[in-house]
Length: 184
Length: 438
Image (cartoon, rainbow over all chains, first blue to last red; front, side):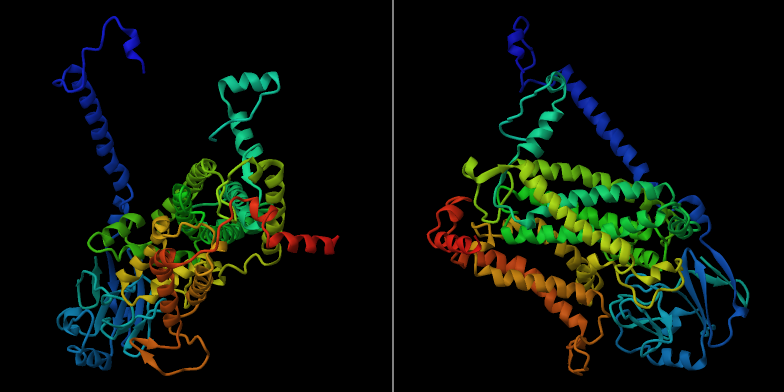
């Protein structure tokens, strides 16, 4: 850069001067570029979030009469397994008995089902550790056992042993009638 | 790419080109005349092998993408179609799948060679960091590629790995939903993984170009770790190292071929030939062999966030290694005190991989000791991985910084040539050996 060699008309702009029109152009252009990139960044990030049709499929209805006592039906909801379990009185009793046991994520059994319907336990069937699907009937608490990293849940789906930090999640659902629930 | 160029254009075309875009000069300076230490052993051939691996993955991958369908309903079947119906599809897919394993074998040898000979030390820190970046990109690419066939292992592997990020406080769940593009691993996830799996190898190629550039500024390290002092210490890259690398590549391809043609599925999992089922997780879920050590570190910690942080920390620590190492001597050839620690480190890494392949609660020695320590039996893979993981970190964070200050290294040779040509202890021995042979 040898602007001095051009000589005849030296650049009137010397650093340290008050902002002049050229500075204004530089700052305005820079700010516009940064603003444009910033404004465009969000659409390019947000496009990866769930799309409208994905969100639209987010709730399902399920007929409970298909599930016999002591049985569990696994349905797919939001791409994940949903456990719909018709609990036996023995399972309920075991869950209530342990309400005040030492737990990682303390919760009473009552808080995990709808009032007056203790036999219906509806849970999101993904282990709260890393998302594997626990199998029913494994582990020493009569509930679920995760084959991936050995988390053990009781008959209320509460975490009792292993690396998972939280109980199996209870989704938002409501009873439309005695035999029909809407999940999501 | 740096320093004096000895290229002289010979033909009219070369002179014409040299004035406009001196690519022939660049190629000549970096792969023909490039002065290379004359004592590089076969551990130095893995750079060339790795370049070949990347080339094979890109070529086979582009071909596979011509036949693959990134949709949850078609992905599995399109891969089976490649295997059964596409002409030579089986060969190309087996090259690609086993090529990933070969790539990792080569990169692990390359990394351990670096650690032994101190190649990461000044002035090669940036070269080393770029290598770590390539390794990270390789892991991301391999993981996303493994998801594409949409088998049981693909799917549940993707579930487990994406859920790792869910361990982050506050932002975790939002990030996993964002990665998935839904509420679980599903079609949007498969689509974006395919897109990124196609993109990342070219990003790797770009970083490899920077890696080679950063290599050619200071030049190669060498088994003595001593800087090149004069022209007597070097030979031109071609034909000396093109031939040596070429020979090593031939041997490496024999290994590669033995997997592709005789044992194409031995490094994979049978479960991945079952189409993905989001409602059932395979009984025994493990990642590909090259991720097993990190998987073992993850499971060694009984806390979700802690395990994730330690696992990423195991890679992060590599980035700062040049500043953790306090020793002025590069090559461990002259650092007898650290050598046993280095070899135990190798064993610890292999042990971690071995632990990663087993269930945490299984006994290591097939007898129940019945002795519980904290949460697990002392004779279990979880305790073995805890010990090995502890050593892994101790090697970088304790042994490397402290030993560099307290050790007494052996005398380092004056130059690369000196120990061969004039070392008083070596001279007579080698002459004797030579005369015996003769």
